[in-house]
Length: 324
Ligand code: HEM
Image (tube, rainbow, N blue to C red; front, side, top):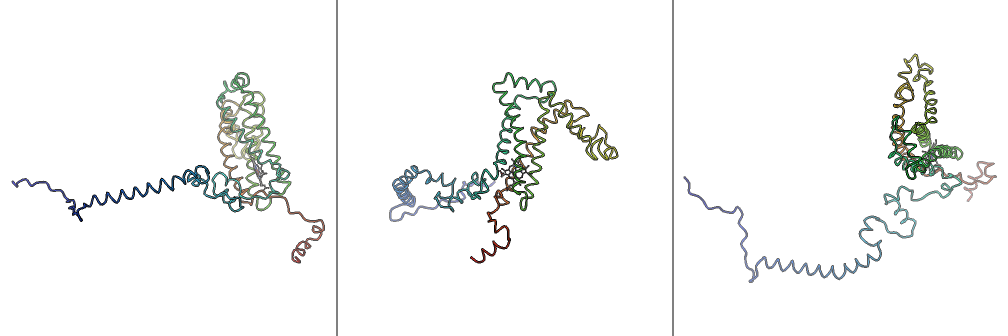
């Protein structure tokens, strides 16, 4: 057996060599203290003074500078940069054509339609707190809302009238786009997105109509979905429908209603389309629609003014400019 060896530390601490009577640790301590004193002096005298001054003007604080990275000087460049570098402000263009945003040009109809969509989303979410999409309960919930819930009648009517208005304003917006020729190059794609938005707006209105489960809604949906029977290829009574194997138990009307009659399944399907699927699709398409307005060079704007004489001879304007 080997005799026990005493435990030795793997690394030996460096031996302190006294320099002119002062140990290394004492020297380091001295240096650190000196640095701290210097810092204290600097911080207390200059920085604190500056910080206090900055607090008087919030635009000079570090917090403000970290949020708004551009100086707010009243120059066009600084203003544009201020808008472009801010995540919220940059939703708006930094510069716009003054004539394009005239109320007389757009009628504000796109904006009003969007505003109504927001109001409808908000009131719709509140209505969901009181509504059950089941045959026994739906109409009872409407009566409860109308007669007993505080502001229930107002809430329901805001949603109902807002929906009617949105259909009207969407049409008017489309009409204005036609009248100002804003569907032309380069805005063809946004026009197409708009057409889908119009169809979805009408579908939102239609699916909402059944939800109170009253006579009005029941018959509107009965008539509406009966039309689907006549869809070519997809409806049991439509052209080439029977040849394509369509019956009233497997055609497009059956798919819309979840059955062959307007009943509980139709109510549930309307509810899901109305409250989830269509609003989500509309929200995505609205984002695309607004993004395209920006990318297509902003709202189109009225045509440049031309004198009557210039209109009569097309070359006159070019000649006039080349003479200048
Ligand atoms: C949910 C429905 C819709 C909303 C919320 C909406 C919203 C807007 C907004 C805010 C603008 C900016 C200019 C303005 O306010 O007039 C705009 C422009 C435009 N919208 Fe819509 N829109 C909708 C439906 C439609 C429909 C149905 C069409 C046509 C089929 C359409 C086609 C266009 C076009 C082409 C532009 C560009 C117009 C221009 O540059 O002058 N939109 N939309």
